[in-house]
Image (cartoon, rainbow, N blue to C red; front, side):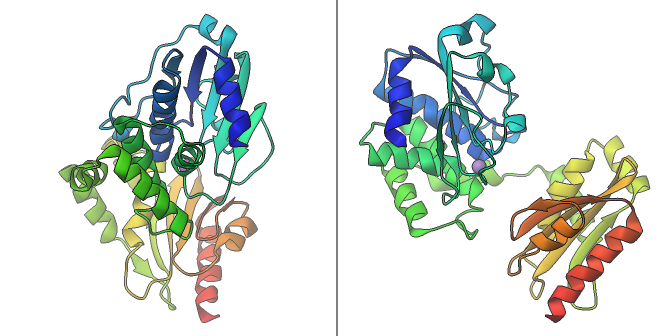
Length: 315
Ligand SMILES: [Mn+2]
């Protein structure tokens, strides 16, 4: 798999690197890491990164994207990173490239480029790229190694999620050696929060409630969502952004964040212990075993879901 991809890279003088919208650390990290893999091993090639702005990952070196003319794609190889589906790719012009390829670790739902390296046993796309470098004896510079390491950290939840394996640490060690990584500096940039955000989080923490069998939940109704949006939050930011506030409560194994939006209720389900995915699926959603989501009709349906989650705690 790796050799085929490298063969494609060798064939093209110009390579454009894509990843998903609203980039996380793995998307930006794999993109910059891939760029530096190419720069370090094929210095004669032109390499570009494209996509929407890096947002909270703007602290990463070289996270500013390139402006690329349509004509550049005519003779280029487009490499898509960290995208489980074609609809996730930012900058659709990967379709117009002379050839395209993909590296990903999400659940496989079908090919959409011509050369694909898909391995769902990796915690991150950055981990796959690090493995390519290590396995194929390629070079990587400091910025590349640091970027790949950053994505491994963010996608593994600081080496906490089930996807973290001994291989994760082996590759992290490999990158640490290549990147001379200052962990304290990196982690403080990765997890720095501004005071406004921290205050907001504390307001959501005060809203946490518990079911009879200790499922934690937050319910944010439409009126409050409207107020929060006026303060600069988004319904997605409330839903996805605040579910984590319940993640480390002693005695809580399942938690869920309900957010009213556009007449429906966004539900973010999490567990540290149980497979909550079937509940999400039952209500028309999906995701992973310990992190899933669904959008339900109204508050009463949301409360039925909550009762189902509570029932899981009885066993
Ligand atoms: Mn990822």
